[in-house]
Amino acid sequence: MPSARDHRRAGPPDTIVACATPPGRGGIGIVRISGQRAAELATAILGRLPAPGRALPGRFLDASGTALDTGIALYFAAPRSFTGEDVLELHGHGGPVVMDLLVARCLELGTRLARPGEFSERAFLNDKMDLAQAEAVADLIEAGTASAARAALRSLEGEFSRRIARLATELIELRTYVEASIDFAGEELELLAEGAIGARLAGLERDFAALDSQAEQGRLLHDGCTVVLAGRPNAGKSSLLNLLAGHDAAIVTPIPGTTRDVLRERIDVDGLPVTVLDTAGLRESPDLIEAEGIRRAEREFARADHLLFVVDGSDGAALRALAGDLAALPRELPLTVVVNKCDLSGVPAGVGNGQPALRVSARTGAGLEVLRAHLKSALGYRPTEAASFSARRRHVDALRRARAHVLEAASTLARGDGAELVAEELRLGHEALGEITGRFTSDDLLGRIFASFCIGK
Image 1 (tube, rainbow, N blue to C red):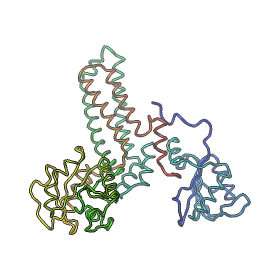
Image 2: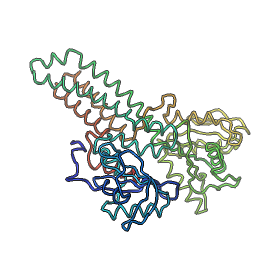
Image 3: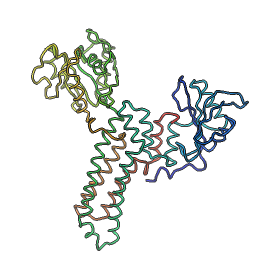
Image 4: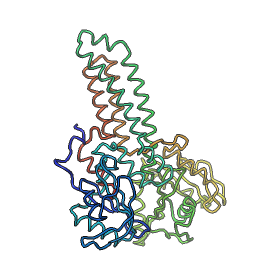
């Protein structure tokens, strides 16, 4: 697969413009311009070109020379800019009308509106960063916890890319050695039988396993997890949501069926972003609105990373019906039984019906820390093994495919199937790694990745 950077645009790219600050009112708003005409726009709007890297206070002018706004302009000459092109930033007052006027002035001067993520895409295409670093830009902006933000920043600074580069270098060296042996057919078996290749493959697989584990932690920080609260009416699901959230996110009443729709609340579990869904109580109901809420609850079960089935520990009938309630749930769904109201009664032995069971009190907070610790374990999150970088699902998938090719190369070598097959597996592993940093990436994938970015980044 060819490198994405091999598919550069024919001729000079357009000069693009976008508002780089969020919509709405603020103290400062930024309009960003990138491309060969950035210096020309600076002269037209400011009356002169700012010195590269130096802030220039002044007025931003329309075509008649009337001021649209006053602020600060920054100019970065290629290649010493974020995109690798000439870049002009106009820092003005952050009102939507002012920002629209400045963007309109730039369009009048021959720029076009930037696509979502196009500034970062140009930085990637101009070798200012690789694809993993470009994705980390969006991850940093969207980080849901401080831990996720720190991990994204480390990826942006190249930590993940350096780890991938070290694996790629080792793969290249192994490929070189194996492919060289093919050119000396008489010595091929002897070269491969020395044991050095097998030992290096084993060491490389261990490096892949370590990076895989760390990348999975980074993926959890990026993607977060979804936990669904389920159970019969009045089991205390909404109270448990409020306890986990640390505030009154859900309405709590003694009236069965109070929760009729799916309520979502984002919480931070030792740095892991977790979306907790409170759902309607499971029961047969003639009420059409409540029945729709129950249907929506059941739909969310299939999307959950984990389900907490809440049962009222003070309700003997609910405890006796628990086995049947659990049997009605999807079999493959990871779940934990949470026995609420443990302050009102003890919990009979075997209440979980073979599933993990925890005792909590949503009223007093008893058992909360045990529940949070259990969630981290059930979701595979290890904060003591904190990820040193952020990662996405596509990164983990590519890493695991590369690791599988290394394992197959080792098996092929052990079977004595020939150096050509070993070399091919190493080549495929190298290409899979290249998908992470963009060394081997299709244009379609690039389009999907950068389309998910915000405009102006």
